[in-house]
Image 1 (cartoon, one colour):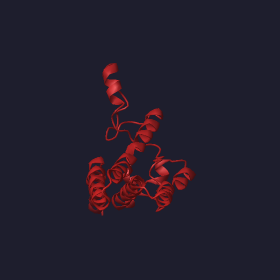
Image 2: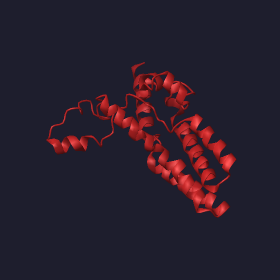
Image 3: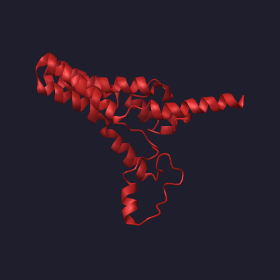
Image 4: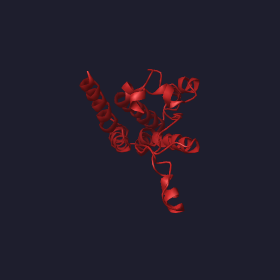
Length: 178
């Protein structure tokens, strides 16, 4: 029985490292979508919109990191990383390291914002808005494909759902993915 638990733990560890949707994946997929939109419409604005919607949506992770730093979160993958061993230079560099997130506001990762973008794109019918909503939808879809098994609820990407849980990571993400 113990070997089964070890095997499950190994699978979770592998999933944490291999199946993470990274910025480079979003960049290349947005580039491909933007290129397809440019080819179909001949509009550079559609390409730019796709890149903004598909890649820069992840800028909300900066908010997550800052919130975690303000709450004294330790650095990711390091149990004693709250303690700096050097001077001010090391402490400043520590601010740029990834933290174990305590809250997940993910303000740009939401179905509500996606619905609003699509409605505005349908209303305005500009190449930029079509590209923005297409890139945004692609980003959310790729995140869902990669991370659906980590969420405690299929409503994770509803910002109102996350707000109802006060954005607390322990209430939104399964413990084995902390």
